[in-house]
Length: 373
Image 1 (tube, rainbow, N blue to C red):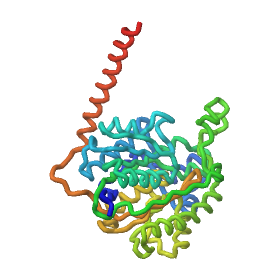
Image 2 (image 1 turned 30 degrees about the vertical axis):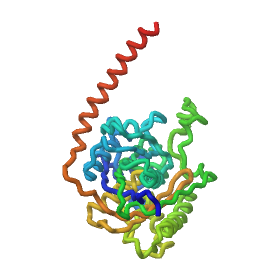
Image 3 (image 1 turned 90 degrees about the vertical axis):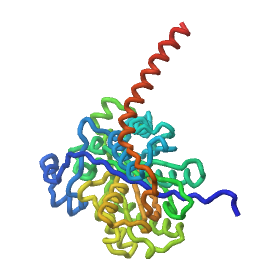
Image 4 (image 1 turned 45 degrees about the vertical axis):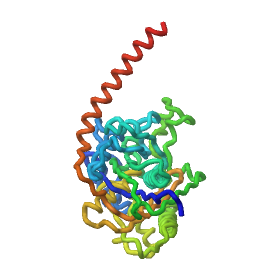
């Protein structure tokens, strides 16, 4: 027998954040050549949320994170690691995760960003679970956050109708009790990288007047090819993750797919030979929120009472890269605690701490400068 205990990564907290502004299909129809009927029949989307000027991927992520910590009853200072996944990060660097760490007051946490497009939350959750299983971390925060409406061409009806903004977060905690994240698979196929991409803004095509004028900073997508790819890999990844967990499809209560297109989900359901009511679907009100879509759907299902402790779920995503993956989760809920933690107060203190640290660096710079003159 191993002298080390078996560690399990349980989902003990969850939270979401979405902008107040809602953009309906009818409003979109005044901006581009489309209609509510066309959008609903082709995608299942009726409306989406759009960030205000003062909002960003980091602000949404921090809001979702505080809610998840509140559910988990966990002090931000107890976090060991923060993984933020986003296709629309605050910057190329610094990592959005570091900005979230500062905003919520996670004083002891390491932080990094993970980019796997719409599969990002599955990748991040699997990585967070592996940190816990290995003993490298006890408490991990996973956040998917997006402001993709800032990267769409509002004259391109093939893409502007699809995307919305929002964030979702999970807290993963160590336990010796079996459950939590039971399996995780991650796959990729870079030969299809051009099917869904944002061409400019990286080292290959830095921003120039030409890249801006030709729309290279907007999302480009080959919708037909992405549809075929997604319809195939959802069912494939679901089966692989279930087998890796040592379970059967009948053992799964709900499947929570990435919310990209209702027709893709319906196609996957046919391949799995199950009914649509075994899937969580909420894209009609949010659109495609990329890395945020799976936690947004899970949180709504929990709120609606569709997910209870002991239920087994499959979370499955796909996206640009091309990437795809799935996880099997046994839902547990918050761990019992004696004292109620108020994570929101730490956010207020975090602002003061951040200001003091900036001031200290400024003073340090002045002193260092004089010493080296």
